[in-house]
Image 1 (spheres, each protein chain N blue to C red):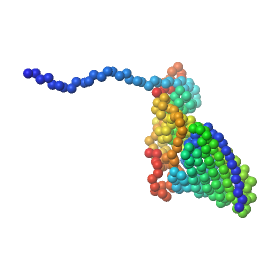
Image 2 (image 1 turned 180 degrees about the vertical axis):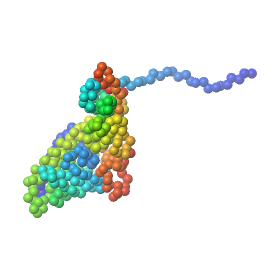
Image 3 (image 1 turned 30 degrees about the vertical axis):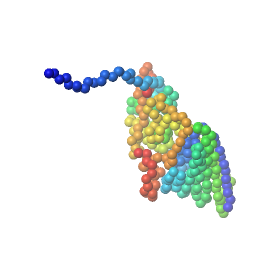
Length: 209
Length: 125
């Protein structure tokens, strides 16, 4: 077996809770990210999801990978923590993506991303392609998510409340101190990512209504 | 014998001043500029909100363009009468500000406005 691995690191002027929100918001995948063509949840709780995703392969965008993946997150006191996404995509190549969020202060954090691809047999020949593909994928996803994170940080610091909006009075439009996030994120029951979720589990989950 | 009934009298309280929140006004854009562009979106520091003024079907509407879902921004389309959130594809009516494609009762915040000297002046408390 051959392991292809690559690391990326960014410091961002957003709270760790904003980074968590971005990574745990499954609804935005097919709307914001050009490469994602489908995303459906099969299971979700506050630490873990199982999802069906389809995405265009970087560089070879005529190829679409369909896979079932598991994401597990571990949050630590103080706002930091780790996501790990386990996937087996195109050509059956297993991969693990690990995203670590470390708060630097109330409004800054470090986001470290590590990609690993495990290559067997003839797929070892793809190692150099995958190495470049990881950078292209990471950069594209980062650039697509960046305006979301910055805007989310801005509205939260002006007192924005999810599913409510900005406070009624201008003088109330402020929010100081550390930002927090409860997972899983509430969603309306008719959200497209829920298409198979309730049918499989028939379990109650936090609803936005 | 006259009986004086101790009927309750209203207690006279000292009048309290009513504190009114000050109205904040902001000259947003020129009306001619808005008519030409169809829609103008700006962050307004004085109101601490992002505001979209629309000129659709010969009518001016002024909405907060921060999606009440998670704070996203909008594509504005006067032809379809929709403001579509770029983050999660939630769609709001440009006419009523109401959410159209989810089973939730959510609405965009509207702002009072007036035309003064050819400018659109928006106000809020």
